[in-house]
Every structure is written in C-alpha cells, then in structure tokens.
Length: 232
Image (tube, rainbow, N blue to C red):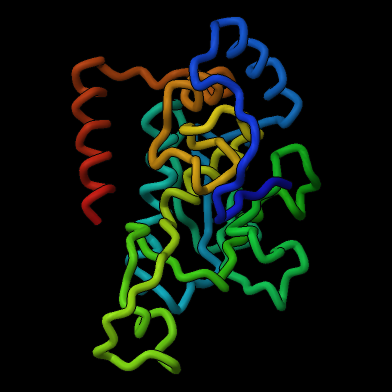
C-alpha cells in the first residue's frame, strides 16, 4: 500500500534531472510491484460510492480524466462496469473514523498489483478533506455550511481529485513513489505535478508498452487534455 500527503514537508529530494541510468534503475525497481494484466486490452473499474463535496457527474469526470492520462501513454483501455466484485480497480470515499489506514495527512491510498486478490482493486479516498475537480479555494460555506453563512467572504483550500487519482492510479498500475518532485508519482501533494511527466511516462511504458499514435496527433491530444483538465 502507498499513500500521498496533503501538506508540504521539508526534506531532501533527488535532483529533478535524472540520467538514463537513473531511470533504468527505477524501471528495474518498479518490476517488484507487478502490474495489472488487462483482459483483451481492457482494465475494468467501478465506483463504489461518492463524496458529498461533489456531484456524481464531476466525480465520474475526475476518474475518467485520471485514467485517460495513463491511457494516452500505454496500450490499455479503461472501462467502467457495475459489478464491483469483477472490477480490477474500485474507487471508494471513506472518512478517517471508519478506516484506520486514513491517518490525518493521508489523502488517499491504493494497493499495488502484487497484493492479494481481495485487496488488489482498492483505491480509497479520504472524505474528511474537501474535494473539487480543480483544487482551487472555494467558499467556506460550501466546505462547512454549519459554521459559515452563505455570504461569507472566507475561502478554504480544496484538494484536486483528478490529480490525486492520477497518482493513485499509478500505484494501482504498479508504480511506487519517485523521490524526484514535480512528477505525478512523487509522494507529497504539495510538490507533486498536476500532470504526468516524462519520468512517470517512461516508467509506466516500461511495464505496459507504448501506445502507437502519430506524434503530431499525440502532441495535440495531450495539449488539449491539459487545457481541458486545468479549466474545470
């Protein structure tokens, strides 16, 4: 299991620029965590429940955005199904009182593919935090209506759901954390990138292969995706 944290933390990080040998060493280490094996090129997923912070359509959109980011890079399709028991990935919102794994700084956690069949699909999101699809501050009335009136000028920070799920989907597909910040697989939300970076992509493609797509079309598609995601 692995998780990401909300707060920025001090500490030493590896250089943001790694050599070819550094990346190859990471790829070799990544093999220890396994991979989800698509069935006919498809990895299925199910949404168990939703958070009260967001309407169902935005939760679905955030999950689709997070999966599409990886799907652009590897030859795998992601398909939503209704059968939770048959899903290869499941998404569930839970609060800290009901899940001992959700310590206060933990935003979400996922199990690697090498764990037991029962645990393998699980991605849990900490519903104690305020979630949005953009991660920007919103009115405190929306976050805590019992203590803030509708016209309050106060705003509070929110957590970007699709950004966090890009990270957790990376774990689910078999990537551990990187020690280089400004990558999606960095383990600290405060220093984690919004989108996949070259290191993230190369590590994942070493497991699943590279999607065959024309370079001009790929460049245009990724540019559109980032703009669309950031404008939500």
